Amino acid sequence: MKGLSKIPTIKELQKSYDKIQSDEDLSLEDLSLFTQWSRFDPRLTEQLIQYFNKHWKKIHPVLFNEEICKQPWPTVVGVLLEFVSHLTLKPSRKLFKNWMNCVLSGVEVSSMSQFYIGIWSLGGAQMYRSSENSLKPFLKWGFLSDDVPFNKSLKKPTTLSSLNVRMKILNKLIQENQIITVESYMLKLNGTVSRRQAERDLAQHKDLRAKGFTRNRVYHSM
Image (cartoon, rainbow, N blue to C red):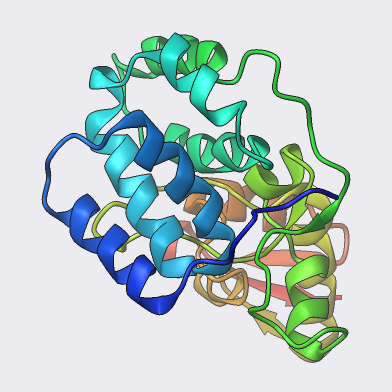
């Protein structure tokens, strides 16, 4: 797999933070390079998602596509924009999707690999958990990670965990607990499931029986 010619230094990463936080428009060259650096730094990933969420309307999609296609991992941009799509509200959502499709034109899904490089110990427990509980925006573009790269102030109710991941975690929760609440299930999923979806998952599980109403409802394992 081809990669960057040089891994960013701590000083270079700090400069990228400063440029993003200056709230000025980044050059397309800098922006495309920073997307590649985000594989080495979760903090940069979060900041780029905030930047795209705020500035995407000012980024020329065709010219940006040309820039990211010069980079070794253009699919990284797919991951970042998937997360942005979970933040975009109506009526801009359809327009954002069209812009995103143009930016990613011709970009093919990667072979499955860890999104972050050098963050976890190779073969360690954290890398295993990250792979097992990978979120949908990463999986869609051929990457593995359970990191939620959202600033809490930006998060809105959304479901980022796949059905397979949710059921695996819910089944384990059932094995360990006689009584389950919506809150305990959402906490176990680290906030990657909306309350509405969590309620549906619990209500539809064959090994759970509901008791109570609305927010006081609990689920007993059978």
